[in-house]
Length: 68
Image (cartoon, rainbow, N blue to C red; front, side, top):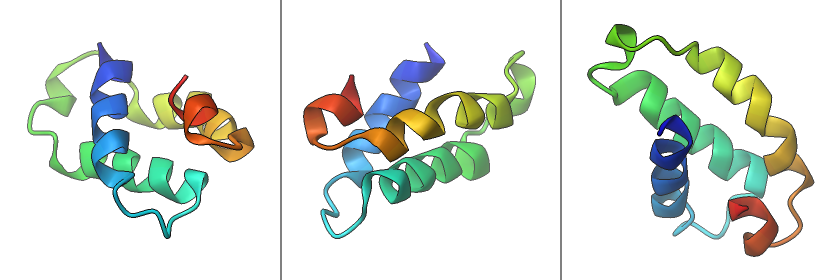
């Protein structure tokens, strides 16, 4: 479920093609971290989510690999 939230936000952020894949990921992660109203009520360590997926974003070479 949390990955889906992140994917949706990354998709929205991806409209800005000037950003690199790690920048897109960081922007989407930050949007969820700063604005998701109920994040503190769910048992998810959002920093751990970031650490888990940032390497995938950094290693992405195209949209297909970024969104997989």
